[in-house]
Length: 88
View 1 (cartoon, rainbow, N blue to C red):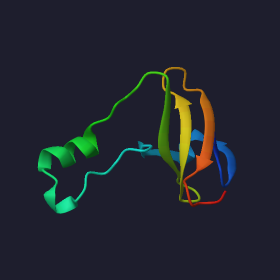
View 2: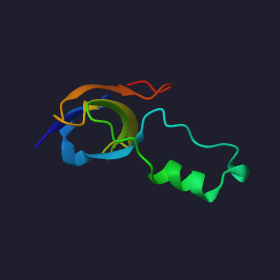
View 3: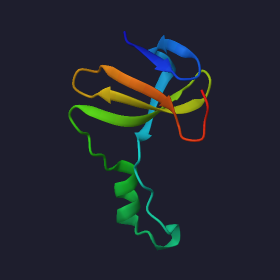
């Protein structure tokens, strides 16, 4: 069992968290001109890098989204931080 640190609530059991998205993934715009293939790639295509990755996670208990930097191979968490514009 792992413990993740919510920037708003502190260390909690991993079962309280859910992966949301890759951090800094840019939504295709303008929406009316985005093809179905481009939209599907945005929703389901992932880089899945080995090593350090920045991801958006949600702490289900408090409902806050935040950025987690973790190693996808070792599962070590390097850092967690509030999303830009949010204060922890």
